[in-house]
Image (tube, rainbow, N blue to C red):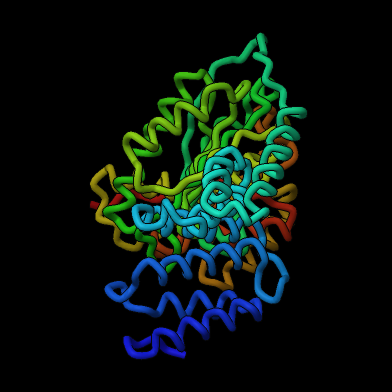
Length: 409
């Protein structure tokens, strides 16, 4: 059913029907189709409720993965804040704020004041005090397992080597841009930073790919800078920033996590009050998120290296026209290298040079045969070219070693 100014009551009855049927995606689509200028408090409230039902219950009572659900809970908070003046003295509005924070990861403390106000406005609704009880139990459970001791051990210098790459593997095949400190891979004192800080902020104006518009992106950078400054003041380390699915996530590893809630809350409320966000400090002594989600795989890592080399070439005043790109590969045997060469020549590559360094004491004995090949290509295709050569070299017991080219001005 489509909304129009004459079928309001019928449309809202249709929304109730969809809600009773646990058809929350359909419900959200219908409500989102209402023109902005025709959305009043009741429409906004219904949309916030639909977001929460989808996040907490899921279509057909099947549940929703927390990664996706958190986004819709944040959206519901954003909507409810936009009608705060009209809703703050209504039991239903406080109920929705309480549920949103109760089901967001580690945000139960924020749910309690809203649940208490809900109970005050509607004393007959026993669910309000039940939310308070459940939230306090969850908070106490976390406190019992928390380790808030300051670790007086050597921490070491924190190096920085930032890389940026695009991937679809961070969550549910959604496009993500990841900025990660590559230097932390070899950091010796990870055990002394056992807690992970996770700040997630919902964009106001995301594009169809879930990334911020250019204008909002510049604004969000200032939030990242503010959080990074807090992390540095603690002597902790920023590990990475992920932009994906209408949110930015900032990750840092800390010694104990003390003080972050108050400091980041103050920064957000004073400087970025319009943004809905969540903040959690959780145990991650093995740095699982860094190694399994932030750090690039070998293809993504090579993409970072490709990007750096292209930027270096541009900085030399290069015209960036297509030319012969030279690729260096290493093989365990000359026979494998020659077999690889025969295969890539079918794709237009030519042999530029080769050398067998078996008798050279200064090189890696495992891959003594060095082969350099070339083909005229455009720079914008470099990732696909290199990934192809990486995979093919592996088939012939070889390794891809890098690429280069002559400068053309």
